[in-house]
Length: 216
Ligand code: MD3
Ligand code: FE
Image (cartoon, rainbow, N blue to C red; front, side):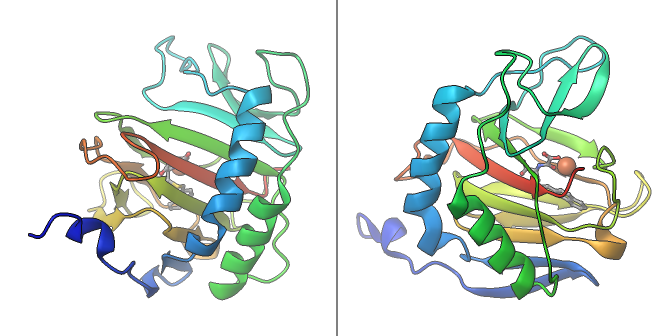
């Protein structure tokens, strides 16, 4: 392959249905990337990513932080949403306009009107980081959509069923892809396979996932 050809590939576009109310929007975030990364740097200056403890007392493989009125936290006491960053005692940084605008546009493109996310969980992955199969159940409304934005290194997303043992679909996610889940697909088991080391031209050996939720 000619040198640089990998970076010259046009980004994939289009909408892929994973379920009745789950959509992958290929490359949807690409026009927002510069604004997202600038806003992200501001957020993480105030609330740096950290490895939270699981209720079992182990450090999570993913490093995370939050912005918005509510943030997802994990410690020995369990998982929950909190209005303050336990590390600083301060409210989480405000939701950047670029995050909210992208989330609204993506939700609308996937058929969800009136989306009002009040929480954004920011996950950082390095080569080898994984997220084991789980359900997102800590939010008040178990049908409200979740918008997930993938940045940096590619990952293979596992999209399972409503029971842990259901066979999971493997969905490759690239820089700029956005996934929207809601309604009947909202409580499906999901996870991320251990990341391969495939450095990204903009973000290096890192994957960042923004997960916007209506938590409260
Ligand atoms: C699938 N994060 O933080 S996006 C998580 O790439 C999480 O960091 C992943 O799973 C990541 O909890 C993937 C999130 C997601 C959220 C809700 C879902 C995937 C979902 C609901 C149903 C099915
Ligand atoms: Fe999840």
